[in-house]
Length: 227
View 1 (cartoon, helix red, strand yellow):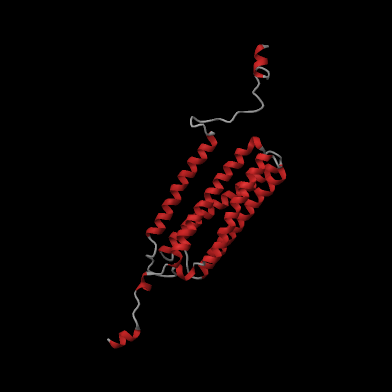
View 2: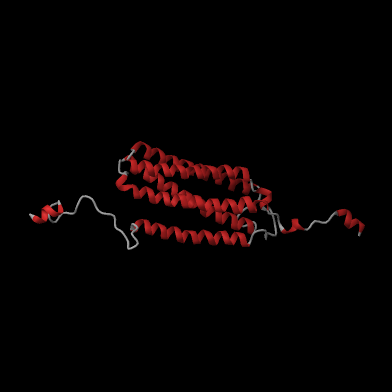
């Protein structure tokens, strides 16, 4: 009887609420694993970005970045992706508030904005292909499509994750007690957004006006005639 009074539940039965497992760092083990994964992913994208920067401007044949990069269009898609981060923050806030309607709305809105970003990327890839740039065209095409393609794959995975959480929310299974599920998706989504800011800055704002090596040497035809 004393045992029953202390535990509050019958002997031999597990409690209805399971405490979140903590690591020695004081961080939930699932969140810690997510941070480890994001750290490894950071190294992965870092290597791709470094490869792009090393081979930047070394393509021997065109088209070159200055020929096809459209900064205004990509700026719009970047803004859309940044807005999706705000929607993700609102989704987590709604989860902590146990507002079921807002949980579903903001999760779906985040996924929708991510899908718009992917739509812009598909449009850009098709436009580049029509203008003669493919992954096997030159160094620029190989490094550009590899880097942005892997990022797009990460965004797509995030969209699938968010849609899955939306259906979980439809069943009423998301709330303050399960806010960690939404928080982990948010960590992943914000990471993807931060990576894109770096990519956008280096590939579009800085490298988007690069010309090929042949463009750096120009000879006036009149000079040839004079010689």
